[in-house]
Length: 78
Image (cartoon, rainbow, N blue to C red; front, top):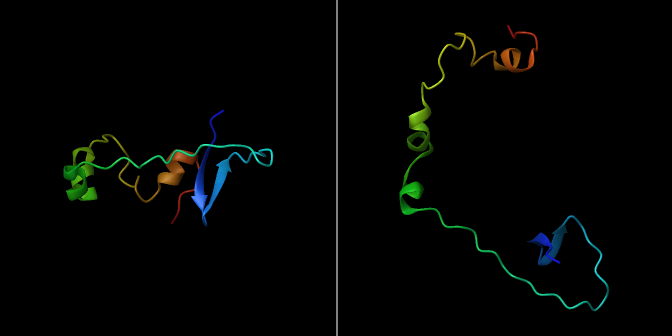
């Protein structure tokens, strides 16, 4: 059986919560977060997203201000 969770306040919290029998033997394996490449760490968010700037074509001129209207059908804001 494999259980997943996080450490919070020095206690392992399982996702989803599980009831283990008292005295059950367990083995814990810490999963190290993957390190980002040095190039990705030095790039700003702008530099990483730059290839996508202007990629969307044919959008209404007020799309940024009224995106809820176009995406979800809400009333346009003044």
